[in-house]
Length: 194
Image 1 (spheres, rainbow, N blue to C red):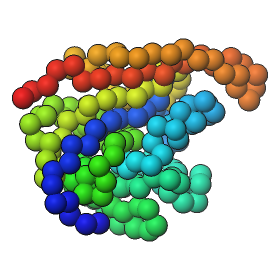
Image 2 (cartoon, one colour):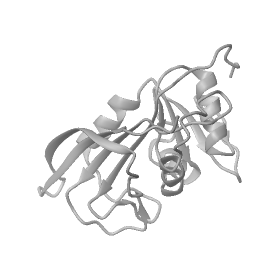
Image 3 (tube, rainbow, N blue to C red):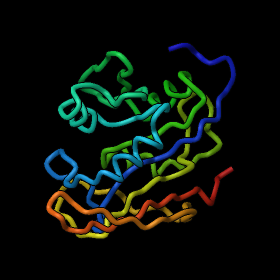
């Protein structure tokens, strides 16, 4: 990917879905299938760059047989190298953000898993927004499922630096016919260390 000639100020966003008890995964898989949430994710991220951990990427490869269509993917891994049409590897979150910024000036999406979300949410140095990989998260797109779900991977609690900017309630019938209630929430960074 080419090096940018000027500093780009891409929005950095987290996109996730979790249950009321913060579960995002169980045994390396998403423990639900909500069509409206998948469509929401696709609508928001298509055309952008997605950053995700190795296990998240491997789950997508197992499901789809390829990376996410219509998006450039950067996989975080210190143990494996991934490269192919529309995906590559970075060794750290900072390196991944730097690669994404060099690639385009569109929104960058951090897509999990738990450790990646935790690290990204803790980034608060909004002064370091250049191409050296320094960044802070500007926005969080969160699908909050109105259920307690068993799992072993969790979405971290949000820091005080985010405010709820938008929320829409949605219901969907599951494959079994049960009603699933959830909310599409958008949080914006309200505090900036500058």
